[in-house]
Image: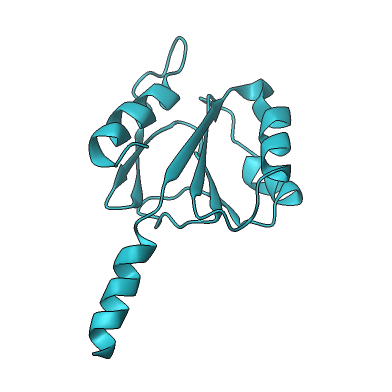
Length: 130
């Protein structure tokens, strides 16, 4: 009986929305304002997909000052959790498979970066879109 309850709890934890917030180098002000005004327990995962191509991001160091939610730089196969903020690393396209992040080399290394489009197109196919 305990195993059934644990299994149900595990499944329900994986059933939450993923919110993508896209922006470019000038997006810091918008990110901080957004995070300051969101409750820490709203039950969604927030993924910040920034248009940084070659410059290392520092958002995972800056944004914790503006939210009580944990803020993490995304790594390969990192579990997506509700009430967390996740930051895309530079030089990577971002995908989701089974509520885990998958990182691939950036598909468009020159010209206008399309990391937000890549993330949204891939994940519309693999996630329930709200």
